[in-house]
Amino acid sequence: MLLGVDHLAFSATDIDQAVKTLSRWGYEPKFIARALLNAPSKKIYLAEWQDDHDIAYCQPAEPGTAIEVTAHNKQYARTQQAAFQALLCAKPDQVASTDQAGLNAGQKKLLAAAGQAYGCNVHPLFLSDYNCFVYYMDRPAETNAKSRNIKSIIVMCADLDKSQGFWELFGFRAEPKEISDADWRRLRFNSILTGRSLELLLISSGEKILAADSKLDSPGFPCLALLTSNLAAEIERLAAKGIKGSGEFALAVGDKDLKICLFSGLNGEMIELIQVADRR
Image 1 (cartoon, rainbow, N blue to C red):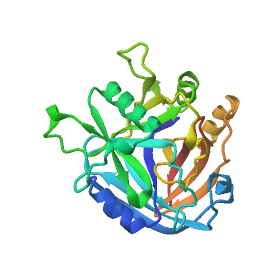
Image 2: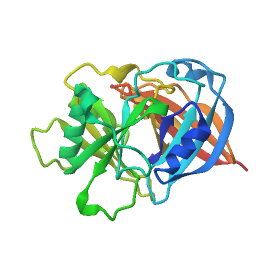
Image 3: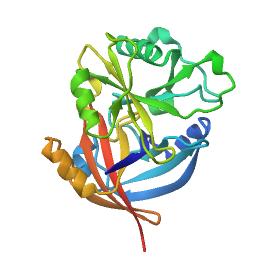
């Protein structure tokens, strides 16, 4: 059974610097773990293999999606941003706005579609230290709102119907859509666990998906992690639908033993299923 969202991965080359960046978004580290060994089955999901990696699991001040900073290398092996885009509820503190004049057609389409989907202006922020963009909502009527939580994750996709069908296999369900001919779809994972629900906005790209070869060490937000109570059963269920993953591998973090399997999406997304057990 899929239980809810665990975290959105954020690729960095310096864990400590990234933790400081996320603190301006209202996120604080729950734990930092260094030199965690990489499972051999992760090799095809990395642009450049390293024996180990660092992580910092950061949580927002209010219940919401955690961000796990992952550092696989001291520099990015490629420049193309990963498939997921993060839409924040509000502009992070102490961050200068980005001029929209230099945006490409795909980024402008993202702004327009996200603005239409959420009924507000959406603005980009270029994070130069991480070679990626993050987006935020501008809602003047809600100027007292302090939350910088992730409102939604965004995926540019080549085929809306196929992408929606894929994500429904991972527990996301379509939200009511006010505009029948819109080139976007809003989906949501509704979890019974506090802070484990999340929205997903699929936007038709109308062109080749540049992030289709995204890797775990690509700049930006490469992977979404979901919690499951039975990883083996989920692997079997998805395989029956033609979706094969990395195979199960183990990772020990703090006082937890994790069973993990990675899957690739249709547009370069990566999904990580995690089963957690307390170490006794």
